[in-house]
Length: 372
Ligand code: SF4
Ligand code: SF4
Ligand code: SF4
Image (tube, rainbow, N blue to C red; front, side):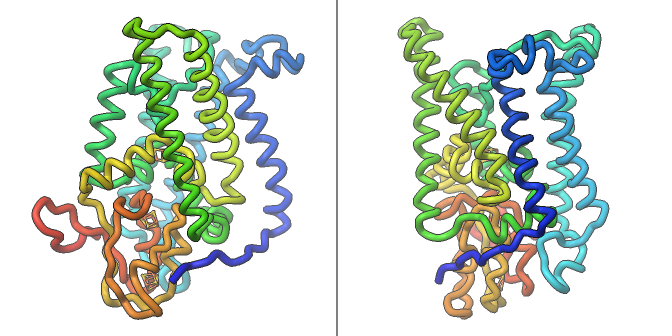
């Protein structure tokens, strides 16, 4: 049994919004990541011209980003209703799991991705808050994996902390903590965002096969990281190789795929296209979860009536219903990272009208009981 997406009619307001959204997003990311392009086209005199009130473009970008993420999280928590359910289910209170998840999204975004990198440095360095030094943006984020080869702290984070979190909690890192995932998660519960998830997220065999693209990005990230490591220990200092790697990592992966496609594709391919097809760290987590025998699982029960709302709610395009029923007869087939890229967002669980799905309790002995 395979679930297929239905056609979706956008409202006139949404149709009018899309070109503006695309232009602002593309221009915004060029401003942020390649301000030198604006200089070369004489749109500005120097990249310093983009520092409004002495604050860098990254600061303003992350301020807007954080306001969106924290604002929507607070709204979800304040309204306190099931955001994934339809009909009667949407009138039920927000589950404890979603309360914790949206609180985590709010706090991680505010503290780890805004206060620590943008508010604390000028205070700790004793410099004026409205006088950011003019500096190139660091495009070397943790999610590109290569950074794990260039510093001990990044190595510890990417190769120890993240895998440990996967072993204990599955890929919940992606739905509870990661900044990219935070935006996808909150947009996915807005009116338009949930329709994009429901109607636009690619499903089916071809969509699943394309997930191998992410494996290629993981291999690319590891190879580039290895070259950087050899350069650090003075084994290889091939400038051309490093420059080629930088072009691949900064322009192709970070800018074109991560920033432009990752965000612009929200209205056309759902909110998790980058997380599903691009992010090297996600593929690493998935492989670790599969071969490290992570404890994370979703378990259907015998209440399933074959409504398929679970599959429609999944931002990762997982055909959840195919694990729950066969021709509307419950089959109770649990799944985790062994067969899917599940991020543990809990959308399918809250969307099910008959409570036929739950997370398996994290157990170090046998699979007993449930978590929700
Ligand atoms: S898939 Fe990658 S970018 Fe997306 S939430 Fe997970 S770690 Fe973050
Ligand atoms: S698990 Fe729930 S939502 Fe999914 S097919 Fe069964 S009854 Fe429908
Ligand atoms: S299967 Fe359920 S918990 Fe996993 S990503 Fe899809 S909706 Fe979220």
